[in-house]
Image 1: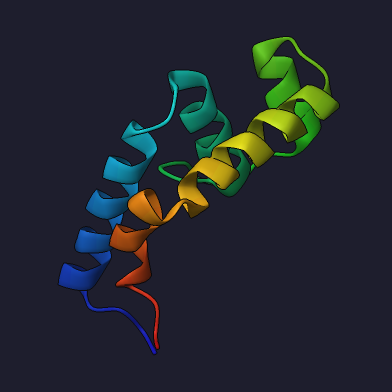
Image 2: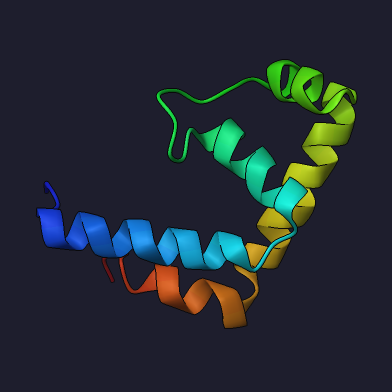
Length: 84
């Protein structure tokens, strides 16, 4: 089911708000890994080179950020966009 432009814009704003609750590094890693506000997503290796750290370290940062986003206090705003 395609999203209408108002829903898409609401989702974009909600995603921005949720990412704002992370550290700058965590938010940038997730943006790069998932292609948020970018033309494409990036591999662990590509993101690692950007931050001058290993793929494993990027994986750890990504995992920690996703754990934070799964917390009910943060995930509530995004859950409203999912079908029941």
